[in-house]
Length: 260
Image (cartoon, rainbow, N blue to C red; front, side, top):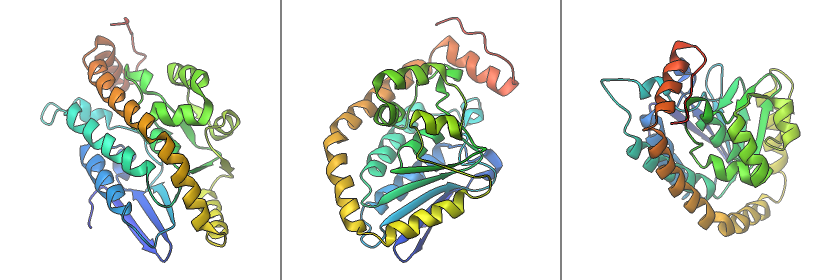
């Protein structure tokens, strides 16, 4: 299976999935969403791979959704198509029969942060910036962001962090319980490799079975949240605040929201 926006490399019992749009800070356009859906669905059938590492090519993990694409008059974003891909991505991702480690460097924001939080283990470089910042463009989290935030920090804290949309340092994210390991600058991939080696030397089949049991119990809630995210995002895309938010982002100015 060949892709244009991601790469998948397999080596014995581990695989590495790399987000590969470095020119766009690995922002996710519809093509990347489709390819991620296809990749995760294929990995669900994998018999040999026991660990999957997810990382970004270039300077960052992922800047999130491709905001500039939202304003492209020649190829306007089809929000329904995007949400269908996101639902496929997250359902397959959450049910992967392997341990998933997200190795974050540079930045992980919006949809990129949802993807990172969906991993079983998150390792972030200490100089990375992490944000569930959909609120900044008048949107709600998608890609299972509500579900993964709630799993990590609980309902009340998840609401407050989503509403604030604060950009966090790796240390702050670790203190909040959003990530699991903070790696010194330049060492995130080395630390991740150490974790992979440790796990592959463990009774990892037992670990994967525990994941399968726990995730199966939560799947109905995840499916419900994905459905509500799709409906909510479609509604938010039609708001005055969203249009103002994306224009302000592109123009690098503070948005003037009006609550509509």
